[in-house]
Image (cartoon, rainbow over all chains, first blue to last red; front, side):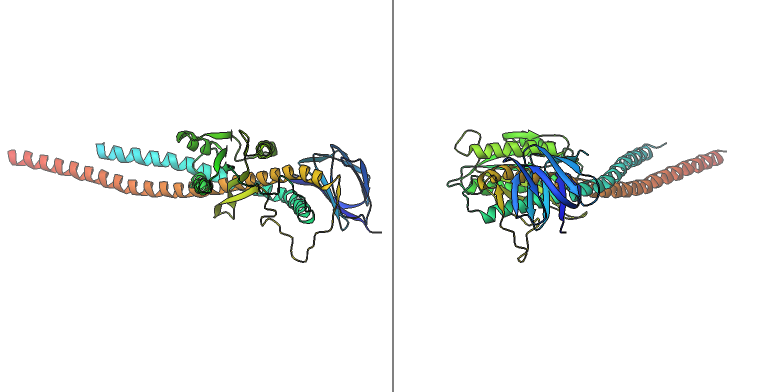
Length: 87
Length: 300
């Protein structure tokens, strides 16, 4: 199965990058789930959590303040001035 | 000890003390450059992602957004000058200020009023001495810039920009002047117009065959631009600050290295002169003794 290549970046460093099966984020419009093969999208994140399900290992939660999310070609970039992994 | 000799010894000692200080500063800068460069590298993914997203929105949407369209009859232009807090870094601050002055002349030639925003104590001192008014100043921490400062600067600028040149404190254009870190030996002052947007200034231009996909926007294009552009400005400002910090350390290291070399040269020269003076003194004493002895002998 195809997988998403994800990177979570904050202003001063790359917080996390790797392969994932699924991502759930909260945009200003509501929650959005992203699976491999998603159409290109550029969304503004409302303050909240982004849940990442990596290909291997336990699900993770990243906090991204005032950021946005872009999806193209199964590449997901979660960008925020301040971002961190919660668990 | 002769007066001459004492003067030379004093000069040697003072050169030695100076050398110790400059050597220490050189070493400190050398170690901080590494860290500054690492921070620049670490922030690259962010800048790349933001730039890419902004160019995607700007190319694929034909919206007339406040932030992307050039205003008719721009009246006021903001110039942000990034210098250091401390001197002893060669031409680091002065070359940026010189560049800013040229920009100011050019803008005024175009009939725009210049509003100054200053970062770094050196710029603040320069403008204060010449009684030029600055709209806002930021001092402290130019050698280790934080994202909070960048955000503060960006917020101020975006607010002023949105207010517009018609209002009391607003502006129609924003230019930044900073030292771009080329490599350890060369740092060049650079002027970038950040607003109205000139998307993708050489950071990571998508190649010809690297076509940007047709994005879906959520919520809608206008709102995305609204949210994205301040972020873009923040990232440009932060990038400028990091570049400026790395350049500052590189410039200081270079300046301090030549100061240390200079002190070495001075010490060598004065040591020669001191030796000369000492020898002259000894010779004079010997001839005095011999002369005295001769006088005693002939007096018998």
